[in-house]
Amino acid sequence: MHELSIAISMIDQITEESESRGGLSVEAVHLKLGIFSGVDKEALLFAYELACEGSPLAGSRLVIESIPLVIYCDACQKDRTPPSVYELSCPECGTPGQRIVTGREIEVASLEVLA
Amino acid sequence: MSTRMVEVRAKVLKQNDLLARALRERFRTEGTCVVGLVSSPGSGKTAFLEKLLAGLARDSRVAALVGDLATENDAARLRRATPNVRQITTGTVCHLDAQMVEKALESWHLDRIDFLFIENVGNLVCPSSYDLGEELRFVLLSATEGEDKPLKYPTIFNSSDVAIITKMDLAEAAEFDLAAARRNIESVRPGMQVFEVSAKTGTGMQPVFDLLHAQLARARHSQVVATL
Image (cartoon, rainbow over all chains, first blue to last red; front, side):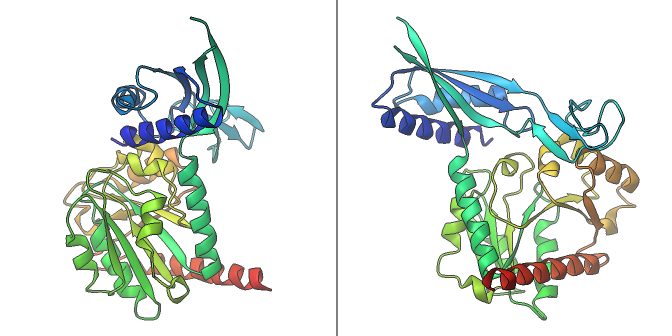
C-alpha cells in the first residue's frame, strides 16, 4: 500500500503551493487519477484523510476524477480506448497499442479554496 | 462561505521524477548500465540476480542495491558474487524511490561500475509508480506463480521493459502454461521482450547476458558521443 506515500507527497506539494501563494485555506483538492497509475482510488481516499491529520490540510476533502486508459493506435492513427486494462489493443482493428495517451496520471488539477 | 478554484496541474510524484531524471543523466554520463528488478515476493529475484552478478563479474565491474523491508539476508547472499552490494532497508515502505537510490549510491564511483542492479522490494503494485532512473526495468514472473500474473498486475508489466520468466526448471511440475504466460504478457505490454530462465540450472541465462552486454555497449557509445 503506497497510497500513504502518495498522500504524503500530495500534502507536501499542496502545502508548498499554498505557501507560495501567500497561504490558502484549502477546502478541497481535485486530483486526476489514471486507472493505469497503479494507485487505488479508495485506498488513496482513506490514506489522504489519515495523512491530513495535523497538517495544514486537515479537514479538507479529496475529490478524485478517474482518468480512463487511452492508447494510440498506430494502424488507425487515432486515440482508442482499449477493451480493458489488461488488453492493450485497439478495439476497432486489434492492433496492439504500445503508446499510452492517458491513464497513468497522478496529478493535482486544482484546489478549491476559501475566497 | 464561498470558494474559488485555483488551478495547479502538478504531478504528485514530480520530485521523484525530477530526481530520477537526474540519476538517469548521471548514469549515462558515467557510462553505467543500470537495471531495475521488480517482482512479487518469492519469485526468485535474488537467485536470478546472484546468477547475473556472478556471470557478469567475470569480465565486468558489477554492483547492486537491494531493497528490502527489514532483513539484510539478500545483500549477504549477493555479496558472495561481489562486495559491491548495498542494502536499502525501507522499514514499512513497500517500494524504493529515487531519493533512496541516490542516498544509497553515496561515495560509490559510478565510473568504475559497468552494471548496477537495483532490486526493488518484492511487490507488484507500488514500485510501478516510482521511476528510479534505471535504463531498463526487468519484471520477473516465476513459473510457480501461474501464468495470469500479468493480467492481475498490468501496470507493473506495462511500466517494465523486459519480462523474465524464472524457475523454468519447475515449470513442468507446476503445470505452467508458457504459451498463455507469453500471451498475457503481450496483452498488457505489446512487443515486450521475454526471457525464460532457470537461475538454478543456468538455462536461458546467456541471452540475458547478451542483452545486458549490448545495452552496456550502447551506454558506452552514447557516452563517447556525448563527450565529443
